[in-house]
Image 1 (tube, rainbow, N blue to C red):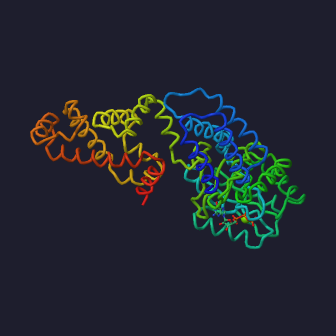
Image 2: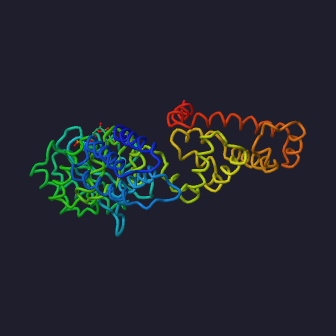
Length: 442
Ligand SMILES: Nc1nc2c(ncn2[C@@H]2O[C@H](COP(=O)(O)OP(=O)(O)OP(=O)(O)O)[C@@H](O)[C@H]2O)c(=O)[nH]1
Ligand SMILES: [Mg+2]
């Protein structure tokens, strides 16, 4: 999902990450790249223009936070603006008396019938009793398609063949729902290759007869700006209450998702992420933004760091790393900062590439391991912490006793620390860091 855009933005941020301080010129270059990336992703021209202007203004004037590097701040601002662009969390309106009538509309092949089934399944999982209505009488196989899905999910379908007019079928469906205590009715309507007057009149008639609580416009995300135009046209004739963007799983660009809310003002309520009936997700702007930025939950991580890590302290640490003077006492300080941020496994889960690994390590293991490490370092005196090479047999025995561990435990820590020092050397360059990450990914 959104692979191309993600890659482009990542490159932009990588270039920024090399900079200690951001000059206005750096921000300008970065914003030019962001602008290009968004335009290539087929985001609406005006939306891009406003977006970049907002990010630029905030980045240049941003008050410098102690805990974030300037580049991280730009990422944070881009993220916040993406979330704002994507809109708010908007749920289905299930208030008032049942049955709640949901009308699905959209062009041919956009995913209405599939989405009707997906939606019915979600509603049932929420404790509703859904009824689906087959009101697409134009395409011969359309009714069967919905009936097959209904059987598969064990959700009833109301149909009357293809000779009855769709508004009548819909009205009867709602009537039946009322009589049989169904709590939600999902109306699957026919699509057209393009919007025409006949289709619109039919849909208006259905609205008049069934008074739907939700008019959900189903759009194929892969059609990009075309989807945005379709949404505007539908909205002129019907009061669309929400959008469902389908085929996001195949959408490498993301143009529709990023523009549609800003251009039409209609909230995205669900996204379709696959052909299976459970591949429908409620839409969360914040999660979508982090997906676009390709950062797992790195942003949450940045926020945590912002709360807990003193930037001056980390600059000092960085200098030590560069001069290769990182010792066990620094290590202890690092551990304490990490501890302040929460459990290590939880932190790892938020870093892309590490999340899989984190799942494989039971939490008790890492956290109890950390406690032991901390106890051992605390039992060492400052000279030992600064130069672990002086640790001989008797010193090791003393430390093991003081920390309630064993000599093999102490040995293990000293070996680990040596390995870590070696790794740190590699991490001093961005390239080394990337190699290291790739190593973990494999
Ligand atoms: N990958 C993927 N495919 C989807 C998604 N939603 C729908 N599809 C596929 O898109 C195709 C068209 O879906 P339909 O549900 O038949 O579309 P429709 O809007 O009902 O089409 P008409 O009834 O002809 O107007 C089918 O092959 C679906 O499996 C999705 O979220 N992801
Ligand atoms: Mg259909």
